[in-house]
Image 1 (cartoon, helix red, strand yellow):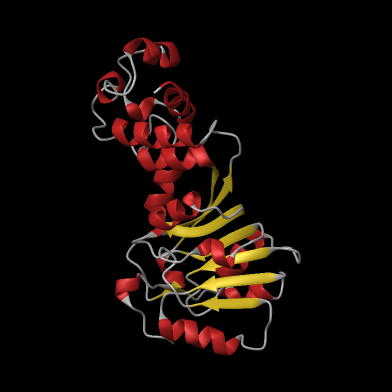
Image 2 (tube, helix red, strand yellow):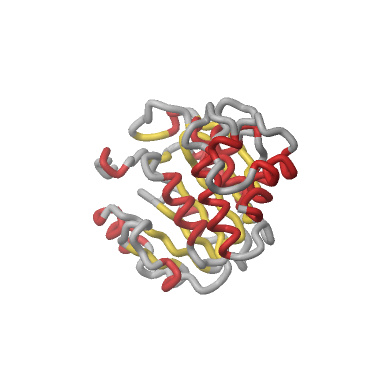
Length: 254
């Protein structure tokens, strides 16, 4: 087995039951094109590649990337790219609608999700494994103590579904935390235009700078009190009590 690199957040999935469960949830079709981020030793790559039409894998670790390239050298369905996914010009490699799968390094997982969100590639869905605590934050409803900026930003852009939790025992080496598997499906027509989308990002970031402040205080330099009252009906409400839809509406008037 490849010696894991702690700096890259490497924990390799080794349990076949969990691998089969993931593939079952993803339900790949022969006509599908997939992007796999962080394939590691190929735990998901092997069962996936024969079921689909195209697979692009991005692996930062040079030794692992080289190993995968050699193993699949005679398979014309697969392209192995040895790059940091956050630094790659991803639009150059992906032209068609794509499905994304991955066991993301936990230390940069949310960065990767936002990177995909801000890219121009057409995404059908995203199936990823993250730290359980992060999935709970992403999927938290308004009013929940885990609900915050990341919850709002992702829920506004994706339908979020937590699929199942995963024990540390199915990895090598074992991480110190539980993981969860999650499906993200992009939403359409949430924002009027790019200006509306940028306003939304600014409003959400400002609102959660201080969770304890009321929304009228957090956004006093961005929107009038009258408009806030018209949209949410209560000037004393705090950011963690607002749904992503209410933030989208506020951003229209900011």
